Image (tube, rainbow, N blue to C red):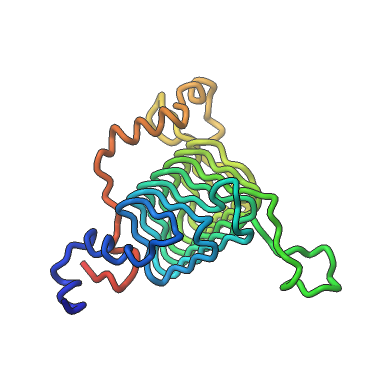
Length: 238
């Protein structure tokens, strides 16, 4: 079968499934997931990708401290889409919950080169391993959003384009700017996003736990439509 026939007649989900088979091996890749061939993963055995998730073209997933015995250094949940040209650089760990979505050019960095002694070349000083990034269930990151350092982002949050996040974000927040700040949170009592200054105690009490929130998402989204074709230009046009 030639590649032109393959692109024209094989459905996109089946194409992604077939192409994903060559990325297996040491990578822990969930069923029906797809990693674009241009993705570079350094530390394959320390990376876990859940089921029906997609990693877009030219993303770089870098485990700085490999060969861990305490679980994955980088974990992407199920039903997630990681956009093109994303960058992951793990210190202790980077953990994504399910249903996460990132746009083009997002960065998740919790390790840096050690700079204690400028008499040594920084390229040879090693990297830090004491910080973690933890992303809750169903978070969305706009174009070129960056998360830097020891940061936890609560479930249901939206990080705006070009936001630069260096501090924890509570659940159900909209975050904008550089430095990033919470501008709105979701009110389940009024069923809308409201300005942070208008948030009341009742709004906080109505927020579901993350476990209950996962149940809500599962009930309302029995069939997730992952945008497989957006993973790379070689997958064709609509």
